[in-house]
Length: 386
Image 1 (cartoon, rainbow, N blue to C red):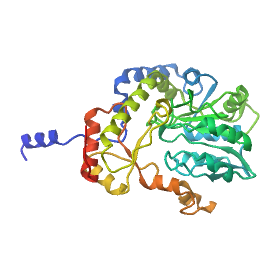
Image 2: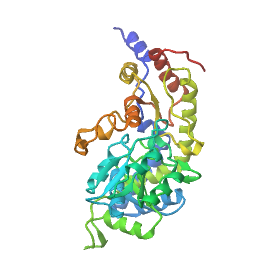
Image 3: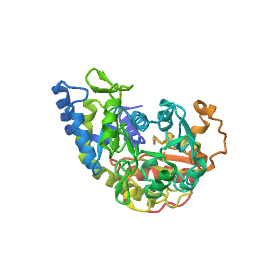
Image 4: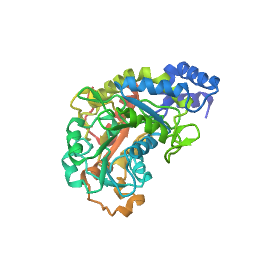
């Protein structure tokens, strides 16, 4: 092949389009992030220093008040919240089976037993009408998951939880900035847990997380638990663990936080455009949220019956996709000891079978969306408008 032919072929072949590309997403503020990292390195302070304190204060303010305690990851944040709530061996914790497994791993990490509750067939979020039947005598807490960036109806959940004496620990790992009735997800319950995994709406460059609480004593307890149970240097009042947000990740988050509102606005705009372009196709679009602020679209997911075939076709054309999450947790081998079976949670299982996450990022442009839709149109048939 001549050099001219190779050049023409390269020009005709579109670049790969991943589900999410951190580098492209962060390109516009790369200098800010680089300066933040250099500031942290130059300080010579890498654990529990000024960058972490600054982020905890800034994120608490961003959430409207309360206290934020940095953690090593979103999973660690959930585990810390459960420990602070006194949940442990002999207790059970309610949650949904169609979440990422870290939600349940945190329950197991404190020695408690996960108890699953099916989800609303329309929203994929916790079905509040099924909580009463799922509560057991040893139930101590409930972890609602704001899946894909959509906030659960927290106003309705809280009275149910209070009736059963359940501690509410919100899994807001995918919902930075989502609001219910004007109040941020992650600030309704006793604790709100956030992940700053690199692909999140607010992402670090490694594992990172945080716990929110309105209670100052709980915040003090969380700070002790994350640092080996220390109350002061070399004085350990309780059994703790190492779960600290490091200074470099905190510095990156400090650089990114001022941009989060704009990024979430972009996500909503792109989600609306995706809806327009995909409307004619034989697939199920994500149900609209009751208000714009209730959804921050961490992911843009559709439901398709032949997910495997569609993913293969997209991959053939250089387009990434992902299944969130293909096997519900109650059917994972790691949790087979709980005795659940296929069919126990039909709504959650249906979502797990059919959910397909498409490329999605504030950095995407119109041509990127149209490229995805074109391949889906060719694969699924149907008329493409707009």
